[in-house]
Length: 159
Picture (tube, rainbow, N blue to C red):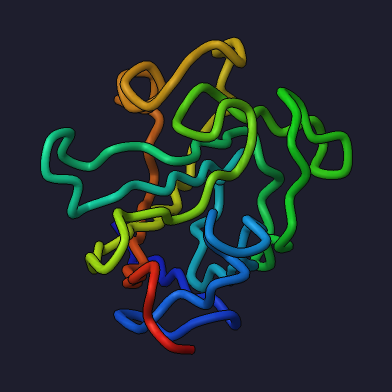
């Protein structure tokens, strides 16, 4: 499997996620860049998980699939089961139901958040009521590549 690289012009890997991309700010999805997408890719999926959640490990905040294959994923993806501006990409059920729901750890705690990009060999036929588990199960046998981007957020940190 060739190496896929996921970055964001909005924050550094392992760095602080700016407040505007969190539920304590504008709750706007960041933009992303993908480098090294393999030939044969038919669709993309993205997932945001709280990797530090003390009760529900890797708690899903956002799942979106059937994104068009592109190296640039725009920020500010609007709420809705299907995103017309992104070829009808589907936003599933997570903490943000059919929408991006950014980091929101308890006050004064630092949590690590994982954005994962998936490169798939086919569009996903799951309904918008599906969530993380269903998407991961569907991806078995369809996954060509994946890459992660980690960031941190603390609700009362000075910017």
